[in-house]
Image (cartoon, rainbow, N blue to C red; front, side, top):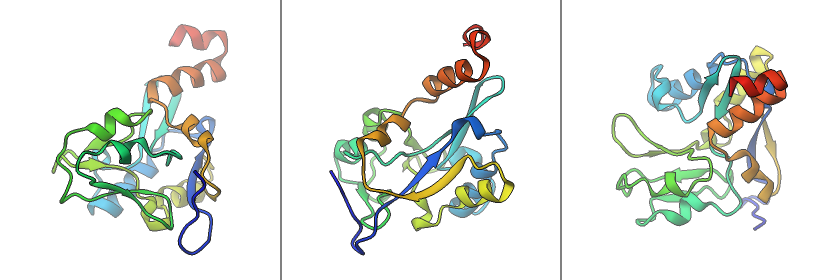
Length: 180
């Protein structure tokens, strides 16, 4: 499915370079500030997991080319923004059933700790704060790119446990197998 925005421009996507993530969690903080109005990492649309020492994994929506989360919603509370390709949650329609979480190959969506509604990265309307703070800090883990929809995006929609295991082995070689 090749989707271009209504303006004819290619949709946004946040590329992530897992090896460069330091676990500073600036992305979680700025996301919660933007969406919640205060520092509340538990409600952040991007979450950083450290399941093994020295292995930090930023976890957020990959905008899969077939949007299994959107298709799974029984009340059509999820849609996609035609200009950014981000998944948008209509909290008025969301019934907190968790179907989107189960349908996502990376189990990225989660239920908000306060209102219990689905939470998914909305790309900050095309100007993601997480990318800006990561770049400003010089970590270069997150990059905003414009590209055609691709099934390869699904490669990034994995559970943090699976990414962490692969990353530990990549970083620490044979010793990484002992950690996982």
